[in-house]
Image (cartoon, rainbow, N blue to C red; front, top):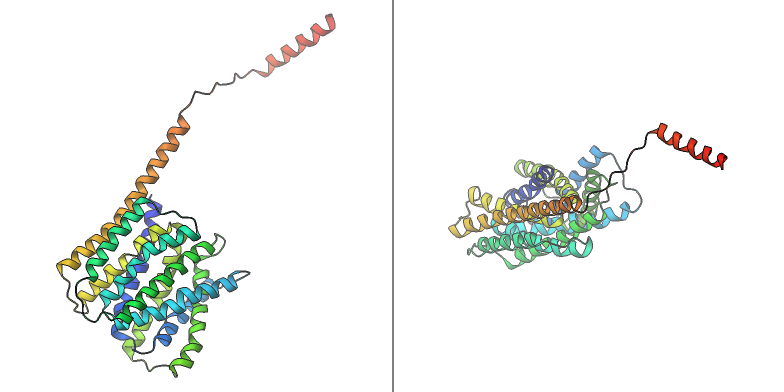
Length: 328
């Protein structure tokens, strides 16, 4: 139980960092350059992790890294950049909170992880909280921005479960994350040069913002996220991901000056309740399973203990048997 809580705490660092990333992207990064923005986020992070692990892909991981890099990095980062520029921080982050249900359904198909009642109940409660946070009449919620955020949620949910299926125990999490980020950045860089022309000029604040986006919201966050996917069920990881909209709403309110209503506060409380509900239900189910196994093991008739015959007694019996044969 304590070990699982440790993995949950580590995984939670990712959605918290991603929730802050919406605000940083909207306020400090240059608008109108989503391809360069995604490339400058992915490629440096991948190269940093690649320098730390010093491992190259082998075998099937050459094409797996390319596929996962395209889904989890190239397409996902561009869509998140567009959504962050078009939507308020609170709205952009809360749309992604629909990912727990998507991850549960995809995991059921790809990795045969059937969602439990507690996971579904937690996702339902959390989704209700998301609806409360979204239905507040926040201004600036453009349709293209919402569509970009929904597409990012769908692409990332599929890519994360695919990574969970392919990440066998023999592949280092740090290495596989580095390969995905590097591959995704390499896909983005030439596309950005063709579509968007020369790289945008970056101010000092934009460089610092890219430092946070690259090192914290990408390198550290993705290592934590994929580590959680390896050690926890997809339903649990999806519920932990609900901390993304909570962070986005709080930052949008405290720093960006977006108004936080009573309705939004209730939504935040429901999201947190959904995370706790999913975790506690899983713990109770595990505990009851352990008790059933223990009861099944201790039940049944007691085993008869075999008598231990000393060695000298065995020899005496053998001598008497041999003597009886000769006398007859």
